[in-house]
Image (tube, one colour):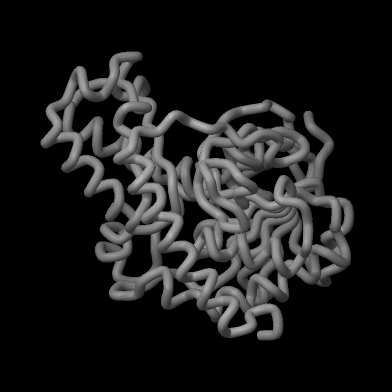
Length: 316
């Protein structure tokens, strides 16, 4: 078993589900849960620890009493922040969650400065940007979970449309985690067949639109809160790739440094994840139409970043 300690900051639906998934996988020696709601975090730690014991997992699950409990963490996942509610855009969450992100990052910088940080809080791309600017960590150290989730949603809608191919669908989504994401039909396959070989252009366009609204659809049905099973599983894949140095390629939110023609902006692109976090950014050969859509997606994230900077978020 991997003798690594990880922390999950935020023990709500996503954080607790993630902790349960990781404890069940038995890939780390210790999972530390941290949340401002002490009774909640105590309850989640007890419940998940008992589930781990039922599964004969040797992973220990505890809760943090102080920030210095973060010492020794190899990976820290941040899910803390207000959830998205019906009628609320990701932009509405911006400044409140940026303030929370700043407080969390400062604790990590003091007590676990070498940890790889996976950000799940929304609005995702802007929160990765905020975390990087507050911490001044190198870009490989902070990565956002979005593309794996968006790709999974695209795969769901492909399966829904086809009625076959379960477990054989590979989808690819780039761009910001929001309404301007860029599902890539030409990099998506069913049992190795290009999506264009098995679906009409009209069906593909319908899938793309449903993918863009996949999160909002769940928010609408739940009425209070947002999705957590799929986000938690997607995050667990990233944590596992980092802990086990798997060199897996996943679409993740990362600071761009010249890739795709952009600098100093966060967006979702394929990256290789290993023990050092983001070890490589993969550049795809996009069509002109995809480049235009990606530019539009980057511009939507830039609006959030501009709002952060205009409000001097580092001093919130």
